Image 1 (cartoon, rainbow, N blue to C red):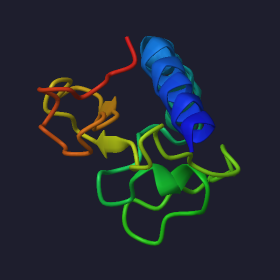
Image 2: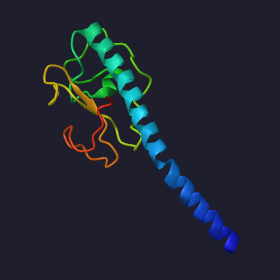
Image 3: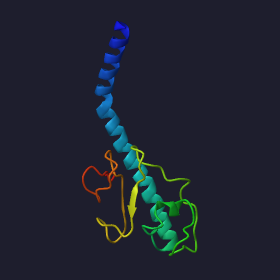
Image 4: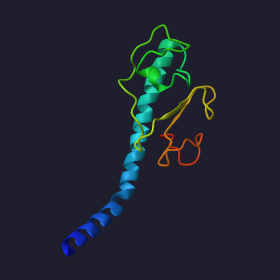
Length: 125
């Protein structure tokens, strides 16, 4: 029993020591995901002359939208849309609140609550 307790204490210390590294890794992953999605959105816009609407969402990069405006020259721009490191979908709005001329794209962050771009939301910057 003493051995199990010692192992548990060592594992607890290891997790506490590496926690900041895990937070950094998640932030880097959000940056990478957002850059990939932004590239796909820019290609979508260049091909069709407009970004997907909020209603169409990021899914418009994976499958042809079924609601207006339906692009005439649609291509699959991504194989799938990844969820953020906390398991939530990335937030996409077009037109955006922070960027009314284009779109907003961010992660709701560790609390998984969309705070309209405030709080712990991660914009990948």
